[in-house]
Image (cartoon, rainbow, N blue to C red; front, side):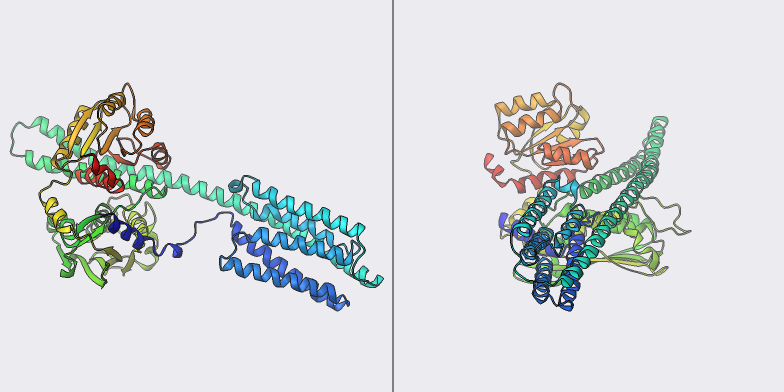
Length: 585
């Protein structure tokens, strides 16, 4: 199993080098190229001028300097050298020292140390380097300036110059050096102003997004909550059982809708914090796609639409994939299609694109005959909290996070969501994914899945102070045949682990009396570092809180309320990440 999992991650990582680089707001790497080009063109000009006034040795020296600068730029472009800035600074300082030995101080080449010194803050992001890199650059420049001065004062120049040549050379060096210093100073002011403007714009975007988020989520959560409260009041008023089934269906729909929105927010925060990973499990791809379509059958029928599911028979294979994330992608795409389609059909299609001995590549698509998307809106629909506006859809609900999450999840799986649509003519969302085949034990494990013994023999310590939450979680776990031990706070959990350490997974609430989860996790990771602990919380986990939980030792975070499949998948991911845990039993 572990070899197949490694193969899956190899497929996922194989195109990492083609990923877009992280956005650098200060554009420091770009400035290093700009400095190199500035030094190159300045050197070319000075080489031509030196040749013009008859200083052929100096002209040749500067030409060699230009060639070296060009080579450094090309090597950096090919990623052969890592730090172009220090290479250019060191080369320039070396050239000025050689010039001092050749010409002395009379040509005033030493003036070029001033623009080099002024250029340092332009090329260094002080927020990331914590001044260390700046000090190294400045140290090289000052030491080189000192050496240049000593050589110029105490060493006889190697070349003889006429008074006219020295006068002309000193004049052009003054003009170029002073001009370069002014240009770099102005450039520094320009870049810092651009950086501050970008920071202010980014801050405003954050404020606008947060305001939009609060307004959207307020509406999205109040709407199903109103339905839940209304149905509860109806149940109180009525004493017959005839309407109870209908009311229960309404309660389930509203609670599922709320849970879907909250889970979207949690996953969005995980993605933004770069804390969401792909965990492959063994599954039958054809059966997974059939199961994905089942919940939508009744809803599509109620709306008078046709749900078409076309699955290539070749996909009836055991493969390795993250079932939870695939379900999430298809649920969002199908929900989106259902929301914007009033007549016609919705089609889920999967076809094998290529096959090898190790993996298969599959093309997926979700097609609808809905309102379609205009060309100008097609880029916007992938933005967070944004929806297509149309007079016929102005009352539609949604956070606008569904497609954003699909794009991010598919990017984690090294795929891309492609949209083909025309206004009034429906839409097709498609993507391709590679899946390695599962190990030879696939049939045995498939048979186990059918008997719902997915956690048979797995021992879980459930730490939860709320009796209702404990009852729901325990019932979900025992449904999968897990062995569950329940305690009510962190201290009881540590006492239980002291008596019996043979637990595969710990599921722990955060807010508890006596000892909360935040305190207990430190002791658990100190005493029992090999046992994964999943945070089990009703808090709306933001990016910072998620990062703090993971850094403090939690292996994952599961938000309450939860779906049984989410709980199962989270535990299975930990069992996959810690295969040695199976030896406990």
